[in-house]
Amino acid sequence: MSRQQTVFRGTTGMITIRDVAQKSGFSVTTVSMVLNAGPAATRISDRTRTHIWKVANRLGYHPNLFARSLRSRRSQTIGVIVFDITDAYCTQILRGIENHLRDCGYFPIVTDLQNDRSQFERCVNSLLARRVEGVIAIANPVYLDTGRLAELAERSIPAVVIGRELQRGLVSSIVVDNEAGTRQAVQHLYNLGHSQIAFIKGPKILVDSQQRWNGIESFARDAGLKIDPELILDIKGRNSSYVEGCELTEELLCRRREFTALVAFDDLTACAAIRALNKAGCQDCSVVGFDDLPSSGFYNPPLTTVQQQLEMQGSLGAEIVEEAIRACLEKRVLAVKHRKVSPKLIIRDSTAPAPRR
Image 1 (cartoon, helix red, strand yellow):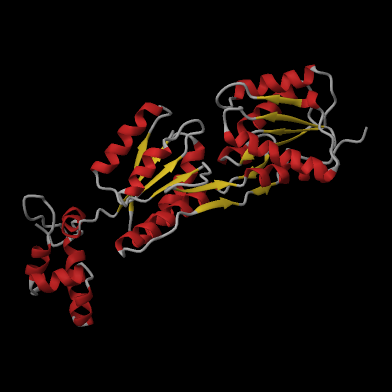
Image 2: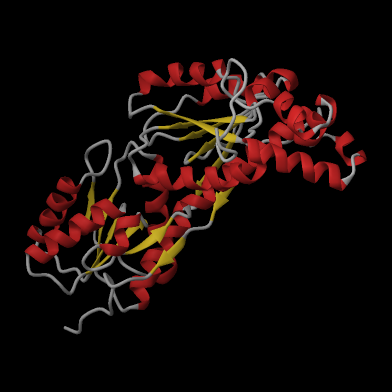
């Protein structure tokens, strides 16, 4: 066996602290203090610590996190519940969660509901069985059992919901400021000279739909902008779809009420509206979406939209859980936090000055 080859020991097939001690010439106690970076390691000379780490790296030693968690009674894991891992909304939030947890030594355990509300209890129980120290739930647009999450908080397992505004209770929450986002969208069109604007509202079952419409009405009142009731349509399903976005845009065109711009509930609906408008020969109609999904910047034309700062929401959620876990360990009382993230208008080619008539 060449020196470059990794030598495996023990029944687990992994290099242990005992192996490193044997190769380095130091006691198991000394090696353990160095590799576990305990407080006592500061009493060991730099030369010794450097030598032990060189031997450990050469042998391919990796800490046994399972054994460490048994000793410390801590798993260093955070449970993350997503409603659909294939949804771009979830994946951007997950990136923010992962980026924060990586830097503070926690590992996320992700479980996917696959848009099936009946799986929620099973997913929670699965995370609890793995002794997660906190839970982050990315809210389903229609369903989320916040009562079950509150039960976790009562057991000193902090919980945070991303995407659902909670006014009270034991569960922290993070949401985007939906009203501010649609205010920015309509103001952008108004500044471009648009006064005849059509709207495709979100499903009535979603809280976000009313909040976004409130932002539109608020700006209209302040600016003296008239909203034509004939240029307002609602998404009828539980969620938006490309097909329905096309159909609703076609219905607006059939009403024979002139409009030079359209504000859609989300990016999917906005892209569908552009498709329907182009098909009808209305290439000079400006369109604004809401979300800023990764594909929106590559649509034809690239979509002007309201960015929800989803990665930031994920990072904030992980930060709140981390702080809450630390408070529990230190037996401190930490107030439940509710954060509202400011959206950002991303201006691209789907909006332009209102055409002169």
